[in-house]
Image 1 (cartoon, one colour):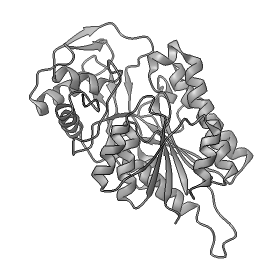
Image 2 (image 1 turned 90 degrees about the vertical axis):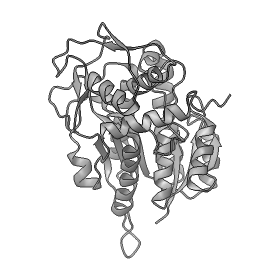
Image 3 (image 1 turned 135 degrees about the horizontal axis):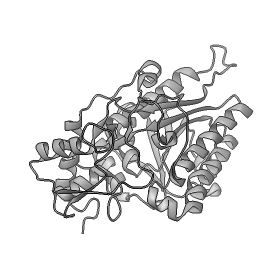
Image 4 (image 1 turned 120 degrees about the vertical axis):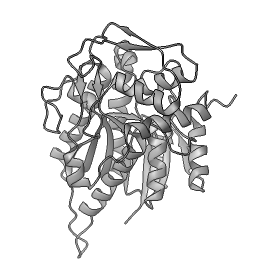
Length: 352
């Protein structure tokens, strides 16, 4: 197989962990990232962990000319497309920025891929495309309806991918819908390093644990859940990374040319959930984190946030049946590895 993969946004949280998993699976990685919400240090550390330098290109996915140079100088099997803005609150304040970057950037990437006949893509989608679910667990046939511009930008890209495969059946496009990625590499060398105050629950908890933040605000304790707090499907980032390898392996098997070298199959547009299939409440997560870290996590209850939902967890059967992948790591593993990363890197990748 052609084993060279372009990883857009590869210096980010999920991208950096996926680079390690790709290397371990025998793929050659080229990272393309504009470093707007990631760190060059992450790629330095990935290179150290795998024992070889990863090729890194600083660039924006909206830069067609630079992308053409990259595709002209490499023979890629496919692309894993992580590059995108991801803060829900910011997306509400700056919707045009999110549509321009997340949807517009993907269009530019796809146009350049078409020019160079690279038709295999694994897209970083999100469970936010489901909005407030009507039925739990959520499977891939569930209705899609978003509650914010970030989620809508992911759903817009999914529609683009769907329409593209209708117009041209030579494309193989997998949209991996992540639930709630948490955790860090077990080495403690790479992990989630949010800018400013974290938007997501786990890094907020870990920054309270290490003393960077005073206490955790829990938004709502009157939901119809086990303890009144929101329930989510947390998945370890290294399990998630393995899901991308499984998706590429699936594309490799499905799209191989026929024995006479003429016909080549494609999979069209394929949405797949990546989650554990289990829900964990905010208070349950806080309790496990406190137990594995030995730290007290002070918290206070505040009002629900607009757009938040009570429960969200995946049906992960399609990933298991089609990709032969399933999440292996527990909530305790997620908390332990997050604390290891946070305690070793109290300021994230900022070494000063």
